[in-house]
Amino acid sequence: MPKPTDTLPAIPERTQRVAVTIFLVTVCMSLLDVSMVKIALPAIQETLHLSPTAATLVLAGPSLASGLALIPAGRLGDVFGRRRLFLLGLWLFAITAVACAAAPNATVLVIGRLIHGLAGGLLAPQTMGMIQRMFHGRRRSKVFGYFGATVSLSAATGPVLGGVLLQAYGPDLGWRLALAATAPVALAAIAAGHRVLPPDPPRAASHRLDLAGTTLLCVGVLLILQPIMQMSSARERPRWWMLGLGLLCLGLFAWWERRLDARGGEPVIPMSLLRVRSFCVGALIATVFFAGFTSTVVVMLLYLQQGLNYTALQTAFAMLVFSLGATGASVVSGSLADRHGRWLVVIGGAIAVVAVTAVAVTGYWWSGAHAAVVLEAPLLVAGIGCGLLITANQTRSLQEVRHTDGGAAAGVLETSQRITTGLGTAATTSLYFFAAGSTHDFHGAIGYGLAVPILLFAAATLIGLTDLRRPRPTTARPTLAGDPRTSTRQYESQQ
Image (cartoon, rainbow, N blue to C red; front, side, top):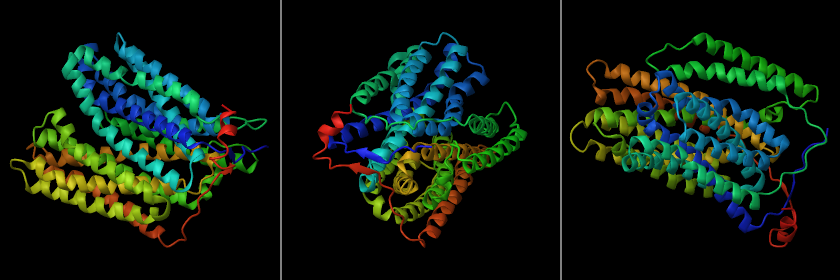
């Protein structure tokens, strides 16, 4: 069966810059949408009279739908063209954003949010796959640095922007504007993408979609995520039998994929990925670290509002220093990760362990006035550590992956992170509320709540330390047809 070619036409510098801007805008758009909905949810509940179940679906449903789509969408992009699926995802994202903003009732909003999540799941692996295809070496690590900075900054500014819209236009109109705010951004990205994104490589003569593998994977992920989502609800008990059934489906999925690969078929997850040690180690580090990263943010949001009685907007501004630290460190890490990525993973993880421990100790002992101000310094350092590790690990995870498998690799990374993020958040919040107890001792609870992230950061750092012993990996570089300075006309003729 013909394989996709690794030969790429040279891409002009200007086109690369515009393409990176499109990718960063897309990431920013997706994260702004998630963070603005969180702060707008009370207003949505009041306007549309959402039931507890509907409110959960509005908030968590898109993440569930996106988690189901990530790996299949990554493989579909590898096979049928990432540019094609990227633009399709942007159209779907824009249309569903407007539909959700105009929703007359809870049913329409829930359906729109679920489809909106599918669009996000379609976009994420295509973005990473195109970065993998268009850039290599130090250029790629710098792009991942900008990528990490955008993630940190968007997560911080989303609640602020949502709060401003609600404050300026009131709860009835404010939440609709918050949900529709990303639609113009998506349309602008579509217009620019049509002009500058490189064409998809020629497809092989025949491709068969692995329907059996896709079904087993989607059902398995759905069954695993469902009880994880229920852990955050006080109204329903998690159905743990679904977790066991989901693991069984994933086991069957792994067996089927190996069997299909041995017969010369095209599995959803290329088996060659599992033979790339840097990808497997990087995926393990990311899976462990992100469970603690998100948990840290959640505990701090709870502590600032419940322990220090901050409003949602005050809390968003207080956490801004953490995101700014991660933003700056991501840019620095991106410029160094190609050569020193493994050391940056260890250094960043160690900094995160020490800084988050300092946050826990400070929150416990300093319960008087200006407690949030005292916490700013360790939060800034914690953000720096996280930014160093995340960007460096993203670069090293994909360093030896062929660009033809970039979408599938990104889908695997995103899906594993999503599952463990849910588990880490559930475990952390459970410990936090258990420690607070009926006395509402939130200053004492912060130490218990942050114990889980500290242990997870330490585990990720230890995994990185063990990886320092092996030789430095080589970068899987696509073959460029010519030099960018002389091949601009050749590239533009293909647009």
